[in-house]
Image (tube, rainbow, N blue to C red; front, side):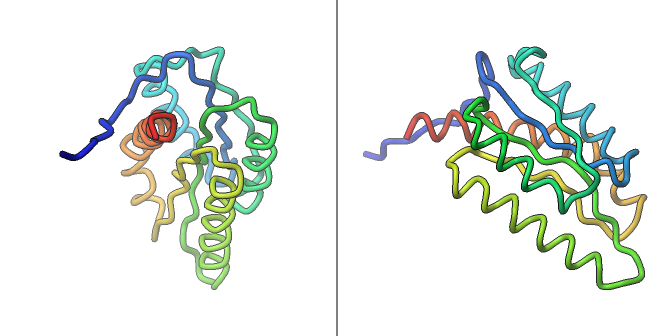
Length: 150
């Protein structure tokens, strides 16, 4: 018989750090609002949510790293938007920010929900903010509880 670890979205008592990129601020603020609403609905207290803002997605990993290193947070969330422009810069920023976010969670063992959107245009980004912001909150809480259960 399998020993199954059930999905657990109980955020009671958890401390969550959020890093929000200010670039593409309308999208970022929408993601933050949806994420915060979902975290509160999952039982995380407002006083247990810490928000740090950074200029852009490339600055996000270093702040996530510092948060993880502080050992003050059970989970971290990266929020922001990288919207394709006319140059290769989109690929560089997308790839490097994603790599950096992944490295933080692997190096420190702290779950990091990556909700830095990568879209072709503003319309695609705006259409995703509510769902992706809320999903980031769920992923963060689920992963903390999963790692604890293991």
